[in-house]
Image (cartoon, rainbow, N blue to C red; front, top):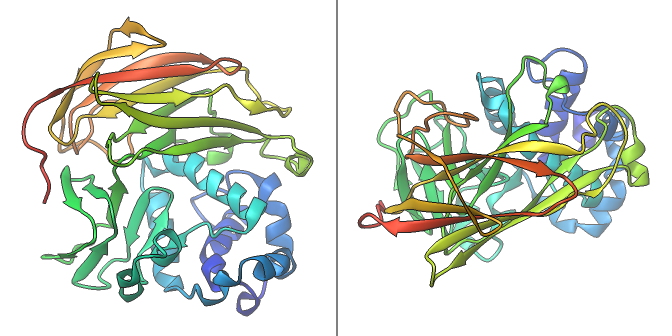
Length: 339
């Protein structure tokens, strides 16, 4: 693989995946089947997409910083839980050529100020800032959660970094639904029959997304052998309730990961001065557990306490042929804690 022939914005993910497939990285490739074509001949694979997406031509990035930070994020204990998000991005890259990691001007093309902060990039709803790159960062439009402290920052503003630490600078875009898998030593063996949906509700930022799955071993996905489970969020101002709708799974594939039902651990983070008062599933009242915030909790943990806020947690059985709708009815606790 000759790096100079690969689109700059794709070098880092390809390096990560190739190192994983060669057994040189702690982060194993999550699915050989989908990556096979890219790893064999990346120049040929992306040739047509350059014509379709000329925007890629100037997506120059600080590749070493991105590679270092993404590897660091995936290698930390517990962060293998992020693989469902990364796998969806890889699928979208295969389907339409979208970068796996997306620079801010890709995500926010109308905001000219992001051009001054091109070292920052997005992976799904996560904004990643390379370590020790600058003493000032920029948060685009929206509300942004710093998950280690629970502080929420207003977007379209710069933020001064008081201390340059070894800790990765990472923010979660509020409104996000992060789908997390149980962490394992080898993510090739991750079983997605139990998934966590971490919901960070925000009525100003409603969201649509999907979980992508295939057999992880063959190229049958090229012939439509894969599955998507869509979700979207909503807000009912009269009921003061956030809704999370999960569709029936569309599509099918064969193999040991093609189960027909799964267990969802759904966790609603109690942010912005709101607190969960009641939970309904398909209109029926459910019991839930409130887990208090803990500074010692792990970011991207799939169960237990969170470091950013109290969480309301419940477990839902989801036959993949059915739809599930969850309502989180909220009560007001105080002033929205913007910084």
